[in-house]
Length: 295
Length: 303
Image (cartoon, rainbow over all chains, first blue to last red; front, side, top):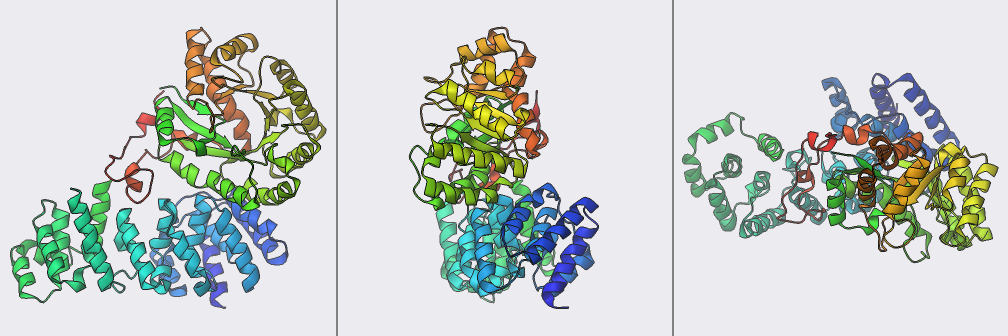
């Protein structure tokens, strides 16, 4: 089986046990029509009307299903997907993948999509053919102010880390901070940290402080490998915070740093440092706690 | 608290203050019919982006104030007169007609009652039948009575079930025929033209609540986004039974537009609590420093 066919089988199997027979047979019929007609209108209508047959219940994948998804496309993580977007993606993958026709159709879908259709499309980027040509679309998608759509690109999606140039990647991360999105759900965040992003993050923290506002603790993850004088001063300030999550974030950022100053700062927080050593304080834990606290 | 539906309001033209006030007054759901923008569009792309706004950004914006936003899709009668453009819009419409939360084809019908208007009105009646949606008819301001009769004649000619058709912008002169023929009669409450709240009360007194619907049609002109709750309160004050108020300012709209299968009371009764923290920051509708509002679901469904 080609990877494309395997992916289709995988999605179909996920739907198999989660939806009624009526919905499955509708989908199979639409897939058949999509593959076998030269007009796009049946496909467009089916893509929209899938909402009449599939609801937005989360998939809730088994461990085995999650592993299988990652094997099929590294980083593919549909655990947060819902039934409707899974059905739409399944349908989409059956559209003939001749480049010109594919882009004419997919552009039309992107440009006329409602919120949930766009969510499905952006989250499906890592499964689509011609990824290099999709890059401008993905970058443009990040300009949205609709959280649902932004999340579909930025979170649990391997596409940005794999294809975004540094400047666009940095904008995506910064916008995630602006919108207080959970940074731990951005894939390959550590691998793609860079000095420019660290400096932008530090500047952003200064702006927040100047306005008398809090700084999202996960931000300090971005500066960790690039601690210079400015950032060291930032982290000192963070350690003085009365907010436990901020302190944990400051310590975690300093933890890998070899400088004497860092070691001294860590010494004042033996208990937390031990928790870091035992893997109890991690960036993911801090991110989750922050999202819970935010409500 | 009382719940209202405003089944005709052009929210793209309204401010966030309006949304706040509407929610406070008890409006839980709105329907935004596709219409013109006060001046004619010259490119099909403008229609595409407008339609996309109706199912995208405006829906999102409304949700941030705890209001569920639905829309109708259609080519309005004024712009039907630019035939070349109208033909392109007709090609676009099937893309939107099947979308989630699209509860009718509308507002369509007559403005000047030209041949072109007639042509595109008929095409859209057929579209409504194809996609199994109700129809929202805009009746003309000028030569209203004849235009209203003609709108219904043509709908019947196309075998539309009158129970699936809402005839909008009625007045004392048109309502009887609309109701007698089995159509739904909607009334737009405008501060200066169309209907005033007091006249509306008289109509409900005379005709009862069956198949009568009140809306604001608030847009970019002088209009009142609170027309529905205000009229409801006036009805109460004038001794109209509560059940009649509920039917004309809530239930009737839900019943007819619910035929689409795209509008369900649970959409607002069981909606997640408003949580503006989810959108804090960026260029969302909340600006930096504003305190987000978080409500429990109980704040919304109390009745």
